[in-house]
Length: 99
Image (cartoon, rainbow, N blue to C red; front, side, top):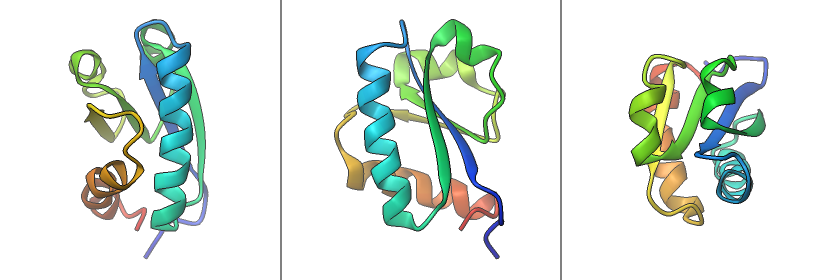
């Protein structure tokens, strides 16, 4: 059974500007495709470490630093691949009860 409150998602890049914003838009689409209500924010790596989230999504080179900061941490290579991100998120979100 899916949870009733929106998922909190944080998209992360090294400086929190362009690529995390692009990933934010991709994540919003992927989560919508999965039927998950979510609030998606973007941030730089330093800010993200101190921000509470249910899911953290970002470039693989940074996600090692984010392990343990959220129940779900997903590394992506292609910030524009909405379908690929939805596939990556499906299993972890099912495990956490969001789907």
